Image (cartoon, rainbow, N blue to C red):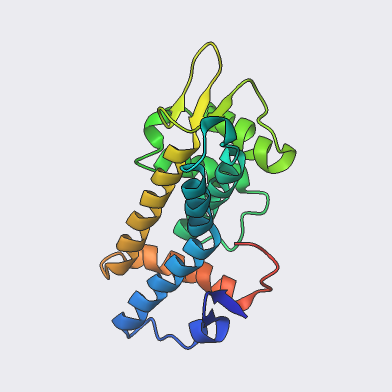
Amino acid sequence: MEIAPNFTAADWKALHLQENEQHWLQAVDVLKSRLYARYIDPVDALIEIENSLEPRQMNFGFTILAVDLLLMETLQAFKEGLLDTNRKSQRVFMRFLRDSSRFSPFFSTPKQCNDFYIEFRCGILHQAEIQSTARVCSSGALYNRSDEGDTVNYNAVHQCIKADLEDYLQLLKDPHNSSQRELFKKKMDAVAGKDETVPS
Protein backbone atom coordinates (compact mmCIF):
# COMPACT_ATOMS: atom_id res chain seq x y z
CA MET A 1 0.00 0.00 0.00
CA GLU A 2 1.40 3.39 -1.01
CA ILE A 3 1.06 6.15 1.57
CA ALA A 4 2.75 8.62 -0.77
CA PRO A 5 3.85 8.39 -4.41
CA ASN A 6 6.41 5.58 -4.73
CA PHE A 7 6.53 5.08 -0.96
CA THR A 8 4.73 2.25 0.78
CA ALA A 9 3.57 1.57 4.31
CA ALA A 10 6.34 -1.03 4.53
CA ASP A 11 8.88 1.63 3.54
CA TRP A 12 7.60 3.83 6.36
CA LYS A 13 7.85 1.05 8.91
CA ALA A 14 11.45 0.43 7.82
CA LEU A 15 12.54 3.94 8.80
CA HIS A 16 14.59 4.24 11.99
CA LEU A 17 13.41 7.60 13.22
CA GLN A 18 14.68 7.27 16.77
CA GLU A 19 18.34 7.11 15.78
CA ASN A 20 18.67 8.30 12.18
CA GLU A 21 18.32 12.00 11.33
CA GLN A 22 18.48 11.29 7.60
CA HIS A 23 15.45 9.05 8.01
CA TRP A 24 13.65 11.97 9.69
CA LEU A 25 14.33 14.18 6.69
CA GLN A 26 13.06 11.41 4.45
CA ALA A 27 9.92 11.12 6.60
CA VAL A 28 9.23 14.84 6.16
CA ASP A 29 9.68 14.48 2.41
CA VAL A 30 7.18 11.62 2.44
CA LEU A 31 4.60 13.83 4.12
CA LYS A 32 5.25 16.59 1.60
CA SER A 33 4.93 14.17 -1.29
CA ARG A 34 1.70 12.76 0.14
CA LEU A 35 0.01 16.11 0.71
CA TYR A 36 1.25 17.70 -2.49
CA ALA A 37 0.07 14.77 -4.61
CA ARG A 38 -3.36 14.68 -2.98
CA TYR A 39 -4.06 18.36 -2.41
CA ILE A 40 -1.55 20.98 -3.52
CA ASP A 41 -0.64 19.77 -7.02
CA PRO A 42 -4.26 19.25 -8.19
CA VAL A 43 -5.27 22.71 -6.96
CA ASP A 44 -2.18 24.31 -8.50
CA ALA A 45 -3.19 22.72 -11.80
CA LEU A 46 -6.76 24.05 -11.56
CA ILE A 47 -5.51 27.54 -10.75
CA GLU A 48 -3.11 27.43 -13.70
CA ILE A 49 -5.98 26.48 -16.00
CA GLU A 50 -8.16 29.26 -14.59
CA ASN A 51 -5.43 31.82 -15.19
CA SER A 52 -5.80 31.21 -18.91
CA LEU A 53 -9.58 31.71 -18.90
CA GLU A 54 -11.85 34.71 -19.20
CA PRO A 55 -13.42 35.74 -15.84
CA ARG A 56 -16.85 34.40 -16.83
CA GLN A 57 -15.27 30.99 -17.50
CA MET A 58 -13.61 30.69 -14.10
CA ASN A 59 -15.75 28.06 -12.40
CA PHE A 60 -13.25 26.09 -10.32
CA GLY A 61 -13.55 28.12 -7.12
CA PHE A 62 -15.75 25.66 -5.22
CA THR A 63 -13.57 22.69 -6.14
CA ILE A 64 -10.39 24.54 -5.19
CA LEU A 65 -11.85 25.65 -1.88
CA ALA A 66 -13.23 22.18 -1.11
CA VAL A 67 -9.79 20.62 -1.51
CA ASP A 68 -8.10 23.30 0.59
CA LEU A 69 -10.70 23.02 3.35
CA LEU A 70 -9.94 19.30 3.54
CA LEU A 71 -6.23 20.07 3.68
CA MET A 72 -6.72 22.46 6.61
CA GLU A 73 -8.26 19.71 8.69
CA THR A 74 -5.70 17.15 7.54
CA LEU A 75 -2.76 19.41 8.32
CA GLN A 76 -4.11 20.16 11.79
CA ALA A 77 -4.57 16.44 12.43
CA PHE A 78 -0.88 15.88 11.66
CA LYS A 79 0.11 18.75 13.92
CA GLU A 80 -1.90 17.28 16.79
CA GLY A 81 -1.07 13.63 16.15
CA LEU A 82 -4.74 12.74 15.74
CA LEU A 83 -5.38 9.28 14.37
CA ASP A 84 -8.58 10.57 12.77
CA THR A 85 -10.96 13.52 13.06
CA ASN A 86 -14.17 11.52 13.39
CA ARG A 87 -16.59 13.54 15.56
CA LYS A 88 -13.80 16.10 16.06
CA SER A 89 -13.84 17.93 12.71
CA GLN A 90 -15.33 21.16 14.01
CA ARG A 91 -12.87 21.56 16.87
CA VAL A 92 -9.89 20.56 14.71
CA PHE A 93 -10.87 22.93 11.90
CA MET A 94 -11.45 25.81 14.28
CA ARG A 95 -8.08 25.24 15.95
CA PHE A 96 -6.45 25.45 12.55
CA LEU A 97 -8.05 28.85 11.89
CA ARG A 98 -7.09 30.04 15.36
CA ASP A 99 -3.49 28.82 15.29
CA SER A 100 -2.44 29.64 11.74
CA SER A 101 -0.52 32.91 11.55
CA ARG A 102 -1.97 33.48 8.08
CA PHE A 103 -5.62 32.69 8.80
CA SER A 104 -5.99 33.82 12.42
CA PRO A 105 -6.00 37.58 11.57
CA PHE A 106 -9.31 36.99 9.79
CA PHE A 107 -10.85 34.97 12.64
CA SER A 108 -10.51 36.77 15.95
CA THR A 109 -13.37 35.06 17.81
CA PRO A 110 -14.61 31.47 18.19
CA LYS A 111 -17.91 32.54 16.59
CA GLN A 112 -16.14 33.75 13.47
CA CYS A 113 -14.27 30.44 13.23
CA ASN A 114 -17.47 28.50 13.76
CA ASP A 115 -19.40 30.53 11.19
CA PHE A 116 -16.69 29.86 8.60
CA TYR A 117 -16.73 26.17 9.48
CA ILE A 118 -20.51 25.93 9.09
CA GLU A 119 -20.94 28.18 6.06
CA PHE A 120 -17.94 27.13 4.01
CA ARG A 121 -16.43 23.88 5.23
CA CYS A 122 -19.71 22.09 5.96
CA GLY A 123 -21.66 23.92 3.27
CA ILE A 124 -19.31 23.03 0.44
CA LEU A 125 -18.29 19.56 1.60
CA HIS A 126 -21.74 18.36 2.68
CA GLN A 127 -24.22 20.38 0.62
CA ALA A 128 -22.08 21.47 -2.35
CA GLU A 129 -23.08 25.06 -1.64
CA ILE A 130 -22.32 27.84 0.82
CA GLN A 131 -24.80 27.96 3.69
CA SER A 132 -25.33 31.74 3.69
CA THR A 133 -25.20 34.81 1.46
CA ALA A 134 -21.39 34.55 1.43
CA ARG A 135 -19.59 34.29 -1.89
CA VAL A 136 -16.47 32.68 -3.31
CA CYS A 137 -14.22 34.91 -5.42
CA SER A 138 -10.79 34.79 -7.06
CA SER A 139 -9.32 38.11 -5.86
CA GLY A 140 -9.25 40.50 -2.93
CA ALA A 141 -8.64 39.79 0.75
CA LEU A 142 -8.52 36.20 1.91
CA TYR A 143 -11.75 36.78 3.84
CA ASN A 144 -13.92 39.84 4.02
CA ARG A 145 -17.03 40.45 6.09
CA SER A 146 -19.58 43.06 5.04
CA ASP A 147 -23.28 43.83 5.33
CA GLU A 148 -23.65 42.74 1.71
CA GLY A 149 -22.27 39.29 2.45
CA ASP A 150 -18.95 37.73 3.29
CA THR A 151 -16.46 36.81 0.57
CA VAL A 152 -13.59 34.33 0.57
CA ASN A 153 -10.79 34.50 -1.98
CA TYR A 154 -9.99 30.89 -2.87
CA ASN A 155 -6.69 31.83 -4.51
CA ALA A 156 -5.53 33.55 -1.31
CA VAL A 157 -6.74 30.59 0.77
CA HIS A 158 -4.69 28.22 -1.37
CA GLN A 159 -1.52 30.28 -1.20
CA CYS A 160 -1.85 30.60 2.59
CA ILE A 161 -2.50 26.91 3.26
CA LYS A 162 0.40 26.08 0.95
CA ALA A 163 2.67 28.41 2.96
CA ASP A 164 1.37 26.96 6.25
CA LEU A 165 2.25 23.48 5.04
CA GLU A 166 5.76 24.60 4.08
CA ASP A 167 6.22 26.15 7.54
CA TYR A 168 5.16 22.88 9.15
CA LEU A 169 7.54 20.84 7.00
CA GLN A 170 10.42 23.12 7.97
CA LEU A 171 9.47 22.80 11.64
CA LEU A 172 9.59 18.99 11.36
CA LYS A 173 13.06 19.12 9.82
CA ASP A 174 14.44 20.73 12.97
CA PRO A 175 15.49 18.06 15.49
CA HIS A 176 14.83 20.52 18.33
CA ASN A 177 11.08 20.20 17.67
CA SER A 178 10.86 16.74 19.20
CA SER A 179 7.29 17.09 20.49
CA GLN A 180 5.99 18.08 17.05
CA ARG A 181 7.93 15.25 15.49
CA GLU A 182 6.38 12.73 17.87
CA LEU A 183 2.87 13.94 17.06
CA PHE A 184 3.59 13.74 13.34
CA LYS A 185 5.03 10.24 13.74
CA LYS A 186 1.99 9.13 15.71
CA LYS A 187 -0.30 10.25 12.90
CA MET A 188 1.84 8.80 10.11
CA ASP A 189 2.23 5.50 11.97
CA ALA A 190 -1.55 5.27 11.98
CA VAL A 191 -1.70 6.10 8.27
CA ALA A 192 0.83 3.39 7.48
CA GLY A 193 -0.98 0.81 9.58
CA LYS A 194 -4.56 1.31 8.50
CA ASP A 195 -6.79 0.65 5.51
CA GLU A 196 -6.05 3.35 2.92
CA THR A 197 -9.76 3.60 2.04
CA VAL A 198 -10.04 5.91 5.07
CA PRO A 199 -8.88 9.36 3.86
CA SER A 200 -6.21 11.35 5.71
